[in-house]
Length: 440
Ligand SMILES: [Zn+2]
Image (cartoon, rainbow, N blue to C red; front, top):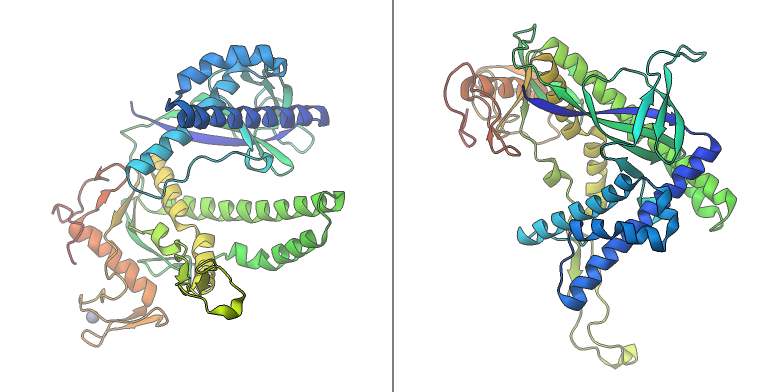
């Protein structure tokens, strides 16, 4: 039976003492990460040797001799730190090989190192879902080797077998993330045989081919003022002061609130859609392109400077011209706030669990085409209404697009999933092979 990985996240409530142990462990992990990055870099620069994960893992016992405090950290947690670095290095070399902007792995500061992982053992859930605290919530203990028994709120039971446990800090809160392997039933059939086209947009979050509109929550936008105010307060505080760190905590809390509210919205919306429809059809979006930062535009520095600058070296100063970044960031914020990519992924995961599926069709001209007769009706982004001069169809712009998306699936089937490199699922009812470039 095929299997899938799923993450369960539970809030932890460490005592003060436990929290300081957790923070201490995080700091040691960060140090280990930075030291092994330094070793790899130095060995390569000086001797041209590329240090591997295995070589570094073999040194861990010696590290413990020189730095006895590392005996206080579970050894698999330390191995996982080295494995993280190994992954970062491999990703770097892959980017180099593919000719992308490589970005060498960076040294981590305390503010950039938030979690450590028990990859196989060293953790145990005690008293799961048996004891209840006063509010009727399910509390239990998470036993972590070398750290202790932490109070954990297990708001839902885990289905499947736990493969790893990651302890994560999020500002002043702590979480345990369990990677769980679940069996996927191949015989599960969705109760609904309905198929729906979904068009995602900025005006409304999503529009279905049935005409239903899901309003955009604009979560970041609504807290934007508060966040701006929190930043202003932070900037007024003296560096290193207690009041500054308090202001910083307030800001982290605001961001966490935004994040959690966005997650709630995405989970609820995707859950509802997946329950209602057996097949959800989306356009294949290219969000990374849509939100890419515009490239900086450099002004060519004059090659000769005539006296007046007092002998300034030629070409030393580079001026940057307006590149439209400010204008684009407004739209970027809306697009990222909307988090469609994550929404579609969530739909796909939930659909899989419910026996349904998510498919994607080619995105070309879904909003320009008339869903009634197929004629092209060009309109720019500001035109919200589709009105067809040929067949007289009158429709909301996004609903028209959603209908086109549904029809494209019915006629041509889904396009191949880029990540897996094979067709997502079977072809549509028309029975034709999917063609990515085909026109409706
Ligand atoms: Zn028409």
